[in-house]
Image 1: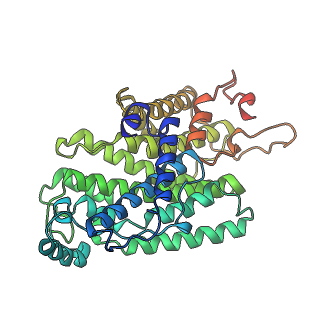
Image 2: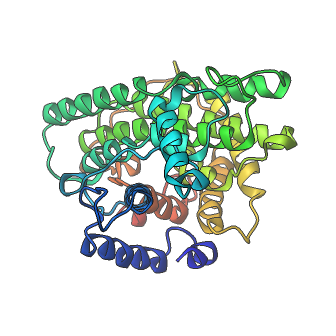
Image 3: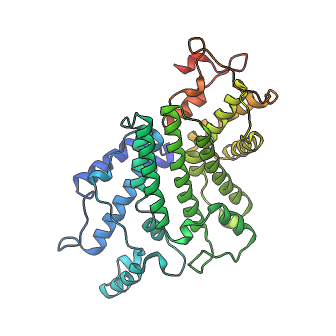
Length: 391
């Protein structure tokens, strides 16, 4: 499955069907239920099952969110357990050494020293549960009333913030501050750990906060798509997400020591947020909407940097197709926007609903379909979107 993912990309039908078979096998084996140590299950095997299910559960939510499909696994019928902060060597060590490592692990993320991958997985083990709730809001059909949807979003945000507040300081620190400081201050240490930032630490921090901001982006997009609320919240969420993505890309370009893997971040976070900002800019230009409170020049600069980053993605990357689709779509919009002078700041004209269809109110609730639609957009001679694409 990993080989297929590298060759065909994470969103290919081959990966989706392979994951479906793997998830079915997990359920058949009962790994989705509570894992306990007993006479037939030694500690290391129980711990490996906990880790395996957590990884599969997270991947299920990640792909389901991007593709706009129902998840295979649900926390409502599963038991997620927090893994121990143990290395592979500690996990397979003798009883005495294992017990000593468990004592240290019980102290949790408060212990000193550089965090490991298991440190990050341990402190974020509840994130996929929140993501499933966000997915239900984004693609579900339950909350059709605006008031009910807002109440549900408020509840999810409270739970999400509680999960963030429970994380240690080094995981809650502003990632943009970290990305800026480590370029100029090699003595900048991880808060509470007394160790330098390493490549893996930066990678995990960026991925964690991108996921957080993407969750907010999905909630705002659900509000906008389902009830046509003001787009200011969606634009703010998209800008916040894209800013972090471009900061991470800038670090990769300027500091060899922190060559973090940015392709997946560009594909799954940069392209959707950039696409929303590009379409908002095109809408404002075509409908002559006032740019008061809307930083048109800054967004243009961000989109230009994103285009350059996407152009640098190698065709050998597994998720190159997503980056190429996003690149083509965003460049198409930028070419259209930059080929004409910026519009005067005027109020939007009133359109008669029986003679005009707004192409910017198309209901698209997931990134995959949005990118395909954006990639297929064609313009008429007057610069407006081809009406045939709105059906």
